[in-house]
Every structure is written in C-alpha cells, then in structure tokens.
Image (cartoon, rainbow, N blue to C red; front, side, top):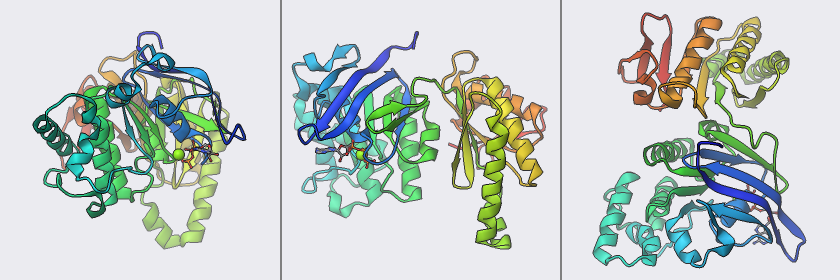
Length: 385
Ligand SMILES: Nc1ncnc2c1ncn2[C@@H]1O[C@H](COP(=O)(O)OP(=O)(O)OP(=O)(O)O)[C@@H](O)[C@H]1O
Ligand SMILES: [Mg+2]
C-alpha cells in the first residue's frame, strides 16, 4: 500500500465475550487503503460484525490497535464525535428508530454537531434524495419496505459526510432486486465520493464488485487477505441456463453444471495463483496479473468447450495502477487480450459506461443496455452497471 494512504490499520485485534469464553476475534490484522472497497466474507459467527463494530468504536478490543486515518482509536478522546463524523455504519439489521420518520432517523448523527434544525432537515432531504427516497421523508420505518429502510440506513450512515463507510451485510435480508439496487447505490457512492468502504457480505456477486475480498474464519483473517486482487473474472457461464434446464430437466442440468465446474476447476488448478470459486451457475476466478487472467480464461474456455457449453466472461477490476484510463480501462484492456487469446464470445465488464470508454479504445453506443463496440473489432462489451 505504498502510494495509497491507509484509511484503516488494525493490528492483532482480540475481542472476547462472556468472560473470555467466546473468542470473537483472535488476532485480526487488516489494512484498508483510502478509497478502497473491501469485502469481508466468512461463515456465520466468525467475527465479521464484531470487527466492524470495533472499527466503528462501538466497542473496544481486549487487545490490539486500530488506527483510522492515522489516529489511534484507543487515544481518541471524543468517541461520539468520531462515530458521528469519521465513520458511517450500515448495520446488519437496519437499526432505524421506528418512532422517528425517515428524515429524523437520518438526522440522528447530525445531533452531534451544532447545526440548526432547518439545516438538518435540508441535509436529510438531500441525503434521502441521494438514495432515491424523495417524498418518503415523513414515513416511519414500519411503513417502509426492507429495501427502503436499508436505503434510509445508508442515508443516515452518510450524514456528516464521513470518509469511511462500514456496511454489515446491507443486502443480506433483501430480495434480489432490492439488494441489487442497494448495492449499485453503494458502489456508485463509493466511486463518486471516493469513499472507503468495508462491507461484510455472504454474496459472491457483491464480493466480486469489491477491490479486494478479505476472508475470515474463527476470528481470524485467513488466506489471501493481504493480496491485492487485480481483477476478478466472473464467468456467468452457461448462457441461457434457465432455458437449458427446462429442456434437460433440473436434475440433469445440475449434473451437467457440476461436471462443468469440476472440469474448469481441474483445468485452472494447473495454473499457479488463480483461485476458483463456484457460485450458482457461474464461478469466480481471482488472479493478480493480466497474464493470469488470460491463462484462466483460456483454460476455462477450453474446459467449457469440451463440454459444449457457451461461456460468458465478466470482469470486475480491483487495483489498477499500471494502465492509463483507470481501473475500468484496465478491465477493458484485459478483456481485449482475453478475447484475442480465446475464442470470440461475449465479455461483460462491470464499471460505468463513462469509465469504460476512457482509455479503452472503445466507442460507446447506447443501445438501451449500454453496449460497447470495439472499434474495428469483432467483439462486444456490455457494461453491467
Ligand atoms: N455481545 C456479545 N455477547 C456474546 N457473544 C457475542 C456477542 N457478540 C458476538 N458474540 C459472539 O462472537 C462471535 C462472533 O460474532 P459476530 O457477530 O461478529 O459474527 P459474524 O461473523 O458477524 O456472524 P454473522 O454472519 O452470523 O452475522 C459469535 O460466536 C457470537 O455469538
Ligand atoms: Mg454479523
């Protein structure tokens, strides 16, 4: 993390409950750079919420240190002010006060500052507009849907403009559509405001959007926590899987899919440093260089080809310090090279259309679904966001 300023640095965090009987955190180290979007995943009870609560200074560690924007939390005198202005927290359950209106809920963190009621109301109105809840300012939580409540919670977390947003499974209890909306909103806010985001999630699609995925098991960060993932390939494979399932029957389809995943896993296992994870009909690969991405794409495509299945490749970028055109430009660059290396096919690249167009050598054509056409190329790119 050389050029990027550290937003959060945790060292040796230990947290126990019930007189030491429960060890929620057993020595966690975590580094999050300013402006980074880090996903935290791991089984239930592994300590994810506890970790966020410590970073948000809602609780204190038994041992270890947390520095946020260079300041040691243990030495912080005014924790109320810290909570109100340095970090925004979106809880696992929305935690809104049911007796207050949406607007009043959003104003709660502002009470830490000396702001007039009029300014608070105006600020709450602006924040609720940001999460697309204009007109619902006076609704109380029981009258709001789960997705709407979670959006109020995000607006509340953004009150006072904190540089860091901590989100604890913000989409965990929402249906797919509402979850997607909340997630897209968070990703957009992160990008627009250069927010540092740490998000707990069990959802692989969510994790794939992050710059980096940190895994926790039994109160520790494990695996590739420190590795900076350059990009994640998301093979949303098996185009038309629903239609295919209908044709061959669900059980036969699952068997085919599992065989397919296994074939890809084996093909990719021969390449060092590439991780594969299956997720529903698709699978993810993580790698840390474009060369690895291309190897992964080739191997996967060969394996899939052997099973006569169509494959779509999605790329989610993480770090990109080497290519002009920013992170998304890098995604397109990798996509183009994969395309050149592998057979023609569709490539899905996540990122905004504007970013994708920058430095990518691509021309943007809006055809409702944000299709991008390669200039003089044979391939198509769809922007997912
Ligand atoms: N206040 C508390 N008192 C006692 N035990 C606690 C407390 N908070 C958490 N724990 C325990 O600490 C461990 C870690 O809990 P934590 O809530 O951090 O898990 P998590 O990873 O967020 O799980 P989930 O995915 O289910 O939300 C669990 O065993 C939990 O039961
Ligand atoms: Mg939790």
